[in-house]
Amino acid sequence: MPNSLVAAMIEGLRSTVPFHGLPVTNRPTEELWTAHNDALLQLRLPLYYDRLRKPQPKQKAYDQAIQSGLAILSSFAAVVDTRQAIVRIERGAPEAISFQPRPFGANFIRQYGISPVALQVSWTDPLLEAHPINGRSSLTTAVSTRDILHLAGKVATALALQVEHRTLPSGHATFLFTREGHRPMARVVYRPLLADLPARTVELASS
Image (tube, one colour):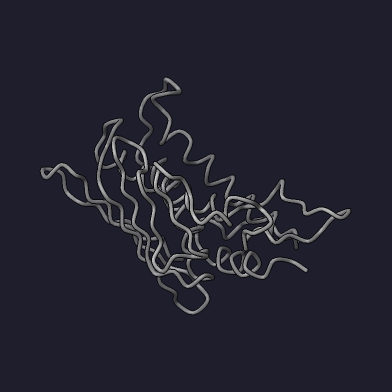
């Protein structure tokens, strides 16, 4: 049996603008992995342009990457009934990631990593209850709860870099998740630590 949480995420994800054209394979786990991988590829240049010795990308690259990440995060939030997430960015990296209510009790603090311990192993992560293949679970193309938390951190960092135009931004990103029927919706507000910089709000695009 397919993972019901993942199947519900895919249903919501396809109603978002960034993933209207997500290929249909009738394997929700692989479809979610494809969407997540696409989002990570879009985030790569906005997040790591300095390490890649590339010029800072144009605003469109940030916008597309943030929209893809928001689509996945909002689809996840709709399935697990999470209403918001707060990411604290310190010197260009996520220091803490907190969803409220916490899905499966998940939380991230850089000093301690992801808790609870049950999410550190694949067989006790509710998103990774995969259909057994040859007596084992095929998790090579699966998205874990850990992946979702880290995606929130990456989206928040990309927005921070877009707002502050420097490589080591610090501030807070607050994600707000709602639904309109089966369509997940999201808004993220980034507030820089520097008082002279304005906050920025980005909403998940609607069709």
